[in-house]
View 1 (cartoon, one colour):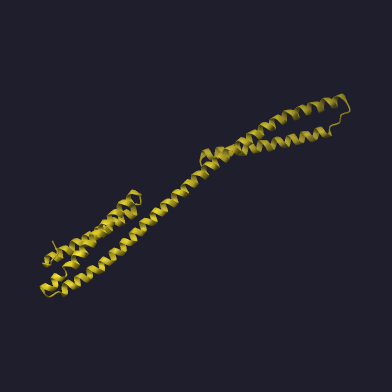
View 2 (tube, helix red, strand yellow):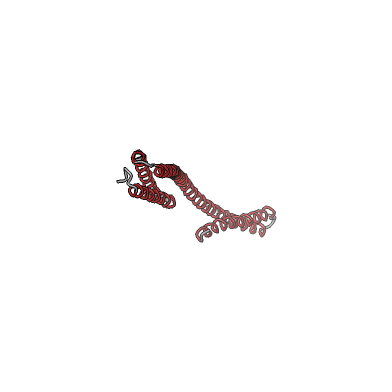
Length: 204
């Protein structure tokens, strides 16, 4: 709690205490007046003085009630301000959570695509090793080209996700997506170099 909050809280407590103490004195003096005898001039003078004191105290009590109401009003305003701030933060949290979920779904889909590419790359490598004739090697050209293009597409998707996550200030997702993009491009480049070194078609 800040010093400002403590100060305002003290004002509320002080106002309530002052009113309570004033009420106790007013009640005590009121009971004294009600029990006071009225059988002599001195009695009448005392009762009159007590009555005047009660009138003065009544004015003081009204002022203290006003002070307490003002303190309560300040507390209510503070509470309302904080409640509005909490509501706005809750809305922001909900919006940010939805954005984060969307980014995670996109990242999960790309992870699945990357896993599928990995399987296809392994299958292509096996087929490439098993190819014994020029005809068999040439038949792999379309497979290589499709795989090469798909890897480029997934890399582009990863770059798009990284940029979107960075714009939304989700740095972890942005870095993970960029790391995935770099891994895909590295694998794509190695596959192209291997295909080219083996003299395979589609390696240009």
